[in-house]
Amino acid sequence: MEGLGINLPSLLAQIVNFAILLGILYLVAYKPIMRMLDERSRRIKESMEQTEEIKQQVEKAEEEFKKRIEQAGRKGQEIIDQAVLTGEEVGQKVRAEAKKEAEALLARARAEIRRERDEVIDELRQEFADLTILAAGKVIEQSLDKEAHRQLIDRVLEESTELKKG
Amino acid sequence: MPERRILGVRRPFFFGIIVLLLALGVISLLSGALGRSFLGDIGLPSWLIVESPQPQLPPEEIFSVLGFSITNTMLTAWLTIAILGGIFYAATRKMKLVPSRLQTMLEAAIGWLLSFCEDIAGKENGRRFFPLVATLFLFVLANAWLSLFPGYGSILVTNAHGETVHLLRGANTDINLPLALALTSFVMVEYWGLKSVGVFRYLKKFFNAGRFIGGVRQVFRGKVKEGLGGLVNGAIDVFIGFIELLSEFVRILSFTFRLFGNMTGGEILLLMMLFLAPFVLAIPFYGLELLVGFIQALIFGGLTLVFATIAVTPHTEEAH
Image (cartoon, rainbow over all chains, first blue to last red; front, side):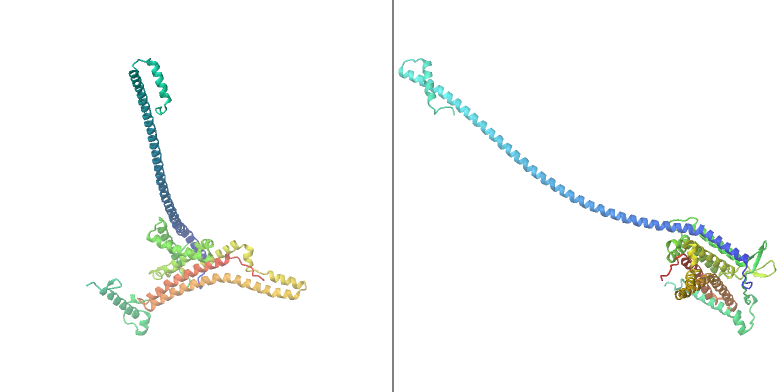
C-alpha cells in the first residue's frame, strides 16, 4: 500500500474534493443548463403545437369562408328569383288594375252615352209631341185643349215600346 | 495568378515549418537517449539533454498544513476543480435562450451526457444518476487533459524536506483519486440499489439461502430425494450470491486500477518518449493520451451508470 501511495488523509481529501466539484458543477452547470435545455425543448414543442393549431385554424377558416361564399351565392340567387317573381306579380297586378280601370271607364262611358241618348230621346219626344199637336191643330183647324192632347199623346207614346228608354 | 496555398498558409511558409519540424526531429534524435546511445556524446549543449525520468507512484508532498501534506496531485485536483467551475460559471452566468458560443459548447457537452444517461438508465433514473456520472466524467477527463499541458511534470520545486519535487502532476496518477472516485461510485450505486429496490429485496441478491434452508427442512422431514435437489440448487444460489457480492467489491478495485494504471502508464509513456527524443516525435503520443483520457472518463462514468441501472432494476425471481 505504501508503494502505491494510498493514504487515508489523501483519500478522504479527494473524496471531499470530488464532493465539492459535484456541488459546484451542480450549481453552475447541471441545474442551469438542464433547466435551459428543458425550457428550450418545451418552447420548441409549444411552438410546434402552436403551428399545428394555427394550421388547423387556417384550414377551418378557409372551409368556413368557402361555405360562406357558397351561402352568399345561394342567397343572391334566391333574392334574384324573388325579385323576378315579385316583378312578375307587380306586373300582373298593374295589368289587372289597368284592365279594371279601363273597364270602369268603359262602363262609365257607356252609362254616359245611354244617359245622353235618353235625354236626346226625351227631347225628341217632347218636340215630336209639340209638333204633333201643332200639326193636328193645323189639320183640324181648331185649338184643342192643349193639356188634354198632351196627355193623349204621352199615353200613345208610352204604349209604343220602340222609343222606350233603354 | 493567385498564390498557391497549402493547408491555408503560403507555400514557402508551409515548407519552412516542415523543414523546422524535420530539423527539430533530427536534433531530438541526436540529443535524446536514442541518439546518444548510438552515436555517443557529440557535444550538444547540456540544456538539450533530457535526464532519465525516475517515475514513482506515490505523489510528492509540496508543503504541509497542520500536519496534513498537500501533494502535487492534490494541487492539480484543485486546479481542475477551479478550471471546471470557472468555465461553467462563465458559461452559465448569463444564460440566454439563444446561446453564446461558449454556452452552446458546454450545453452540447452537458446535453450529450444527459442523453447518454437517459438512454441507458431511462428518463427518470437517468436524471437521478446524471450529476454523479457527469461529474465523474468531467473530473476524470479534465484531470487527464490538463496533465498534457506543458508545466505538468516539468516545474520543479523544493519542498520542506529539502527534496526537489514536481509542482504539478496529473491528478489521475495519484491512486488516492481513482480510489476516492471508485468508493464514491460504489457507495452511491449501493445506496440507489437499496433505496429503489428495498433493503431486503436488494440484499437477497447476495444472500439467497431460501432454497438451501428449504432443502435442509425437507431432508429432516424425511423427503431425502426432494431435499437433496433443494440442497444442491440452494447451494448454487448461495454460491452465486457470494460471487455477486464479491463482484460488487471487485468493481472498486477494477475502477481504481483501470484509471490509475492507464493514466500512470500514459504519463510514463510520455516521459519516456520525451527522454528518448525530446522534440516532435512525442507529439503522436500526446494525441494518443487525449484519446485515452476521453475513453477512461467515458468508461468511469459509463460503468457507474450501468452499475447503478443494474442496481435499481428489481431482481426478478426466475420461474421454477
